[in-house]
Image (cartoon, rainbow over all chains, first blue to last red):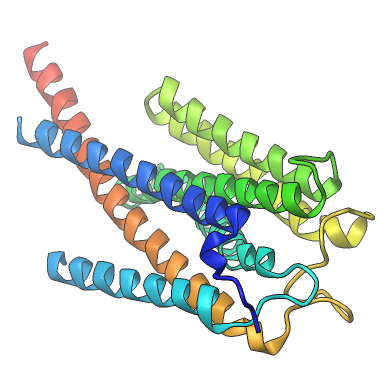
Length: 43
Length: 233
């Protein structure tokens, strides 16, 4: 039985946050590349 | 294709959300580490993702080298997939190292140590960063050939990383899978690992498919520009 909510464990929260941040930053890069390729393909 | 991709994205987010719920609230905390052990449910899937996408990069690089003079269309598609899978692998590798470092800070009191597993992993990450830099700052068919050769040599570090905890005495914990006696996870913790592994691999496939489409478009635009330049000349 775990009496404390794991959401309050700072190292755990940091690790999960870092994972999402890195993935979302890369997703933003992919979206930028996608837009750039679409624009150059049209022209 | 568009509908399938949206469905895949929705399924991925659902699996990841459930993976988060199971990891945080369903499976028990580790007896010794407590909630800190839950970092494992994001750490291990990152390594699995890295292994899958670097292996895909290797296969595509071999296909490119084998077909570059015989079937240019397939060779260029393989090259685009090699690039996108290397990028995804680098992201997973970075996440694996960072989450491991955060765990190390809490468990060992240090962010980093020059242990065999950590060092070989850092070398692996640097090799693939070099691969991406090579592709970024050079161009043309020679760049693709050089990058494919580098990818094949670079992949040699992947089995070394995997075997490092078996070959050398390391500070890194023993493997979760195929680690022999006194290693692995308690069966009650496995659902969290499998849900997150499925979710993050699905995420990787989704992102690689998007990046691959963009790269194919970019290749097409480059070809158009080259043809236009020839016509002008």
